[in-house]
Image 1 (cartoon, rainbow, N blue to C red):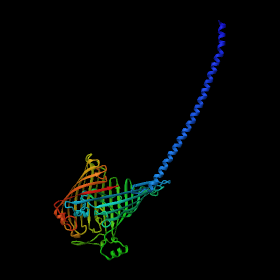
Image 2: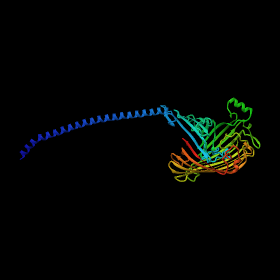
Image 3: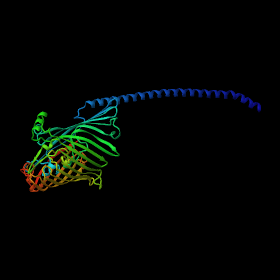
Image 4: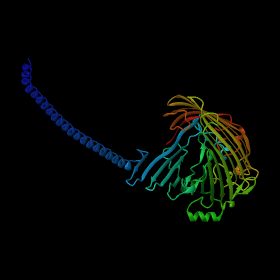
Length: 517
């Protein structure tokens, strides 16, 4: 039995060894095959990565080419098609050109198919800033074309050149060359972010040229300036002497109307232009701290005291003056709700007694003084209604002649009601009371009385119809005006008292476009 087991084991031993050899061979073959497939996969992966890299390079090149083409197109494109373009040089310099503007134009007539000259300043108080509102009360055409060129240099300093051309026309004619008044309103340069400006001047902006001061502001729908400092000069904005206080320093030059003197005639002959002899200079210091603004202006005009004002008496015009403004720019509706508000208190003496526009009136006498208060707010009453009330009051004495007086107060309120996203209804009411005694200046007579206006204006907009500053607007309107009969006697050359514009109530209606961008 033992011998048989040995024999069987001897017979099976070669078979087992052979099976082991076959298994190892198969395993080696499979390993070699796997190595070949792995190598092939690596090769294919490398080729795929190469293709992806080539594709990415081609995409990047395509983007660069598209950017170059776009930059080339933008540098040559007409402003009438594209309002702005910008490009950057290889050195990092950046250039931008912007085109903007403002326009209003419309028609206005009465029930007889004709009107006199109307407008926001149509009352006797209008000549001293007493506007009554422009909605449903304007038919003139006023347009501006604004060009702004900006350039950032390699050292990060910035240049801004700005120019504004304007035309004003009181006719309906499309050819305004005979009746329009075209003028250059602004042409100035600003320099900022200059590396050598350090300390208080690090964030300051240097400027020179003909301009409207950057920090001017008004009540647009009343067409009344709260501060309008303009002229030709030079200055610097945003000097930071202390904390968050920012100070603007500037000097503005303007010219007053000519006077009757040989010196004036000879000077005009030399310059070849009228209204150049009497020159006025306004030195302005304007401070801003948070919502508060405090401005002080000193005025000097060397030869203006040669001017004589005539009326019931005669007085010489002033040759110097001063005015000041304290303003508050609120970011809410007087703290009562969302919206905004602005409030100013102004005082001026001598040439500074025209407080809304320092240096704009050369007939003010040395004893002239003016106090003015103005405030307006804007607030949403609901999702469909917005409201903007305002109050402006002024008292001016010894303005052009001793003992004259110009006192008035204006209330105005405008509502906007949304009908849908492109259509709204506007409602405006204005009331003004005036007590004016010009002492015969310019032949005007003493009057007192009130004026009232109601306007209803269906209005079309592109969007945000309850926003008071959203434009463009196309508005259709009907306006009712009335005033005391005494106001008809103020002047023989103004609107009140002219044909068809006597007290007792009148209706006017029309349409107007207004836009800005």
